[in-house]
Length: 234
Image (cartoon, rainbow, N blue to C red; front, side, top):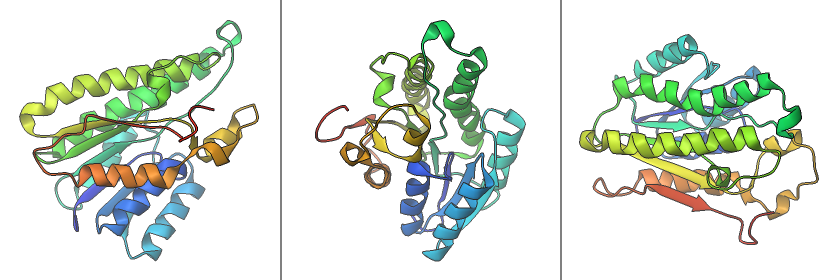
């Protein structure tokens, strides 16, 4: 994996950060982006501390010009992109009758359109053996009250993933949906309610799974990985 280029969105914290660190351990060059400078700088420092190389960029995944610029910079490292991990996401909760339209639009723009834009531009630099991972959620298969925007975005992301997989089979590019249940990330700190993170999946375990799936034999494709806390949903 040494010298391969791995592009990861939403890498300033949580799953994105852990995925970046796991791929860096394997010797890959890590191209990461996030919305906030503090988080992305911290991930950049940690990658370098363990001997990894990285390109860290502030990028709004819903802005096509920013996405295209980020991908172009990442591609210049070796002329191609080996792995794309669409991880960036936001969540807002509330009843539909009082849900702010701008938050609905932001959720779809980041969680769904962002994955589309990164994929659209990264594919120009991906060839046989490359791999796209879309980080979905069990909310891509189950509806939860007050989570309508998030569920809609993740249902859409899973549909996009399934269609993309069929579209790219002939090019030898793999597409995998990662479908985790509740995961211990800072995301929960922004959601009203009492959440027991001790009962959640660890973000590092998901990161290790992503790397392991990528390292599978060339002729093997894991289409979906569903991961849940051993105790079940919260």
